[in-house]
Length: 569
Ligand SMILES: *[C@@H]1O[C@H](CO)[C@@H](O)[C@H](O)[C@H]1NC(C)=O
Ligand SMILES: *[C@@H]1O[C@H](CO)[C@@H](O)[C@H](O)[C@H]1NC(C)=O
Ligand SMILES: *[C@@H]1O[C@H](CO)[C@@H](O)[C@H](O)[C@H]1NC(C)=O
Ligand SMILES: *[C@@H]1O[C@H](CO)[C@@H](O)[C@H](O)[C@H]1NC(C)=O
Ligand SMILES: *[C@H]1O[C@@H](CO)[C@H](O)[C@@H](O)[C@@H]1NC(C)=O
Image (tube, rainbow, N blue to C red; front, side, top):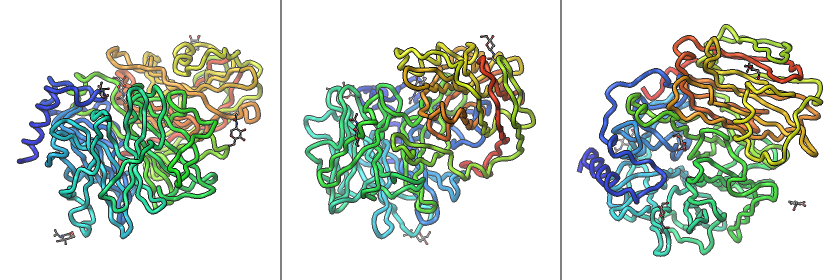
């Protein structure tokens, strides 16, 4: 059968049978709508996007023989989820990308109804293997492997699926619709090991599988980890981080000076959570540190629009790189009209904070190569209600780094201990609600008269024993369009503000996305927004303070961002 026929078979299954998958919104009326034209408004300038159609999870990122490979979930037929294949792009610098033919698409009984997310592992002898979830004729989720057809092809264009697939099927007592997204494998105690995301009733879990030869896999008696009332664990990711330094480690590295990170994407909330803990390879047990809460009280990579992420070890620069997907915040009708939906966020280097309680994240250094026109400002005082414009750069496509300081915390508002939900607090205390110490920060993607703006800002509170720092990326005033999703995303920032009296912020602004990194990457928030006035050449950027304590903008460094020369073209 041809790819096209297979895809039509998929459509039928997804249309008629929505027991397959609760996670994906199935919109039968849109499944066969090919994009006719591609609307440029809201397309990003320097984020990863294919020329058209729907994308979701990044899959199997790896560096192999001089090239970075990124695969991703892709609908070759339209701008809503469906007909999913593994699209494939390669790059020498993680900035410029060349699109290749899809690497994995439904061809065999074990993936005939879909080729879903998975990971790459490079085996000894420099042999890459992909593990992915296939949807079989009974609509069960099964785990498969694929290997390059020709290891001498520098682009690894063709992948074959050996006949001994699938390598793992759901056991009788397991929920066959909740068994997916195999991780990159690690090697310990003579075995290859992987995790597969799942749930048992309401308990989320990561099943552990072991193999001697990467072909025969046996499920361990106990999952590596699980947590009550967290629902389906999608896209688990498990990797070592050194206790000190910014270096990344190969996924199989163990030892005294290493901690482990377990990340899961919670289907129930559609956000990602991670814990930092100790992995004992002998018992294959993972125990989160007592500073690292499980479930949705836990730490997040990003407090905004960031999901289904995956990391890989980059041997070229000895770092661990994190890729996340951001969906749209507009409607499916908008997406069909635009002809595209979904972006991959800027890859981030991740490492452990010196206190060992959280990760830090920072855009990969290669991004700096796209910086163009630059403006700098320094030592500017911002009093209550002040707003200063950052002139001279393209404010719709920019990279901004800014450091704010202040001399006293006396004016910080009282923190009510019942405020546990940062997003709710940001919804109540937005940038236009006057405060004591803050709100101060940036107004991004703003129209000249502030009919539209997406503020990214801090607000400092005085708690019982310590100061509490809130960071917001608030989409509620981002657009005059009212059909879009406009959450007041927010997270707390764990900094010693009483000693430092300083907060830094970096925002990557790119037409319909604002990715922000607070306090050197301690708290990260991504918003998708659709300004109408503040688009098409009339976009403004301001620094502001709306608290009674004067703030000093010590330094601001902003750049217009160029488009990569090659983005999947
Ligand atoms: C494998 O790839 C190499 C390099 O592109 C090419 O020369 C060779 O013909 C390919 N082999 C097969 C069997 O396709
Ligand atoms: C199995 O998981 C699917 C997807 O989350 C869910 O819709 C279904 O109710 C589950 N079945 C059982 C028996 O729990
Ligand atoms: C947390 O664990 C550390 C050792 O890892 C220990 O020193 C500390 O007392 C523990 N704290 C609590 C509250 O259990
Ligand atoms: C500052 O707060 C005042 C009063 O709450 C509000 O009217 C004004 O729009 C705010 N300014 C900015 C720049 O957000
Ligand atoms: C992205 O879209 C918004 C608006 O439709 C939803 O509320 C989110 O749940 C969704 N996020 C993901 C990860 O799918």
